[in-house]
Length: 143
View 1: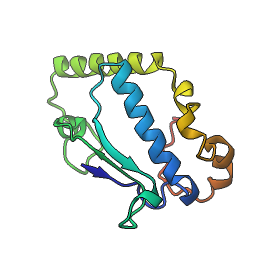
View 2 (view 1 turned 90 degrees about the horizontal axis):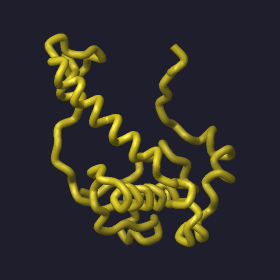
View 3 (view 1 turned 180 degrees about the horizontal axis):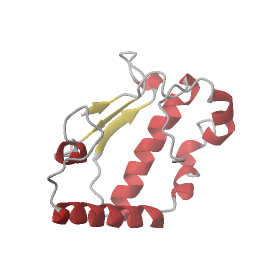
View 4 (view 1 turned 30 degrees about the vertical axis):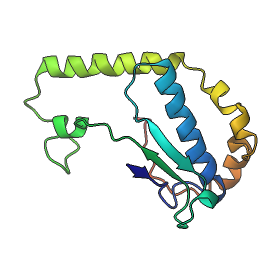
């Protein structure tokens, strides 16, 4: 599977760093947890892509079924199916909790201070400048 960042979701000057960080996080999760994540075969910055398509990640595809397929009443619905078995919901919530517990134990800060990122601009220093350029959907979690 080949992944490219969605144009407009990350400001242009951070798109290479976003891809590099994603690769680093996948590697960290794969190395220190049993969470199934795709194995990265290759990746590159925009300048590495001779086709001019920008930064990329080539990775394994993980077979599975999305939770929305299992739980949504219809493709466009935001409501859960009414006939979901309680045991299925309990199984999925336990699985989700195990994943979160493993993620909370990881030291992501160490991941981003590695030598690999010294050649990139620091995300924290540039994120404030780029906030107005980032076009992503937001979710209101206040209710």
